[in-house]
Image (cartoon, rainbow, N blue to C red):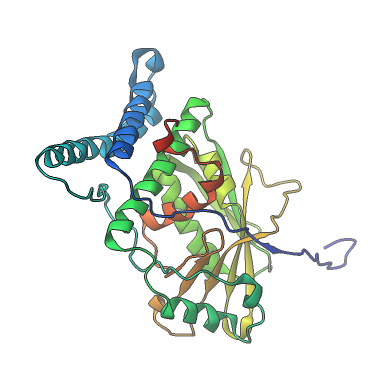
Length: 320
């Protein structure tokens, strides 16, 4: 509303560029040894006496997450070394510890964004792409994808801890169509709440104009907020499109101008009325991979890892 008149804003949107996201890597035994060494170095940096002049609850939590990988990975390396001394064998993939696995329902088809909006029914096109595609990962590749995701996730938190930043800020989730999208807002808020709480905590949550504000604290969460910033485009029957903007903000206030992102990072094909929720599909534009929308924590972390891909430093190259 301006000068007593309702005025709209036209904003051109673009698709997020494809990145080399989670591509399963066939790790060698030497790779696993290097990963183990770097994880130990990270843990030692978190727990050495000079790093603990004052109680640091976040460092203690992060150290625990590192050890959840270090201990079983060490046993795995020992087992492979022992078996390798007795006979030649192919190194199998390490199976990380997880409460829930990355779903095997991720699909390997890559979205052709140029053809997308030429479709008469975008929702049916996305659902059909998902239903006819082959699985993205074999069982061994699923283990590798899980490990890659966890390494990027912990790397993000560790770098945040080294920077001595509190990782405080907010994620504003707002419908760009005023008064619409309450279910979509709630769905995105729930997913973001789960990934935030894995590394830190949601300190406060509340409604704002046409949206929801999540205020967070935890190492690396400011980087997570930037990765998730973008347009989440929900597509319903007859190609009706509902853009939901996720915006990273500093502090607690949503007053003043907030730049609305112009990059679509995910597409959500909503089900037909009264349809089974399993018919929903999500397509991540950075990785190009589709999946169902009923995501576990490990799937959500995989999506964030796709946003971290461009800045990722490989554990197997001796740096972290």
